[in-house]
Amino acid sequence: MVAGLTAIAASLALILLAGCGGEEGGTTDAALPTGCAKVARPAPRQLHLTPPTRRLRGPANATLETSCGSFSVALDTARAPKTTSSFAYLARRGAYDDTLFHRIIPGFVVQGGDPTGTGSGGPGYFVDEPPPRDLSYTRGVVAMAKSPVEPPGRSGSQFFVVTAADAGLTPDYALIGHVSSGFDVVRRIEQLGTPSGPSRAPVIIRQIVIQGG
Image (cartoon, rainbow, N blue to C red; front, side, top):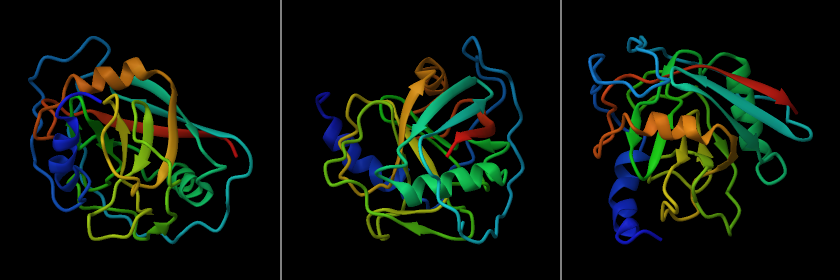
């Protein structure tokens, strides 16, 4: 583990994963990494969806098409059937289309999935599925964000991709899967982050395409 990362994670977990408020941040005049397109901050949306009734069956993959390129996530449907099914359902309903990566903290995580772009929004429902007891949030792991007062494994629509070797988080955040290809794109997005979270320029999810399941 990187020296001091546990302490950083402890202090940032409340800020990053609380899901309670976000900074406006983000400008369109920051220098963009090669491969990132200049985009406007998307308008906030409110979602009022009902929970999914269908479960994914078998292996599934999610391709996140972003303004900095595309990366893929292998969904862990075996260990997190409810969480991955909800994530796929939201993607197929367009919940993630044209939404912001509202918190990007270099050396920690990249977080998105809030339709309001503030860090306080969600889909209108929640799912409970405790993560595997032995889960470690290491580089490339994708998991769902929650507030500190919510029980382990509760999730809405917000998710994060771990960019640290080990984020030092306790196993409280519902598992989605791991980045299977395109981690260079995640690194590209990470370059636009700041220590406090708001990005130096907007980075958006154009859409998430689900295959399989």
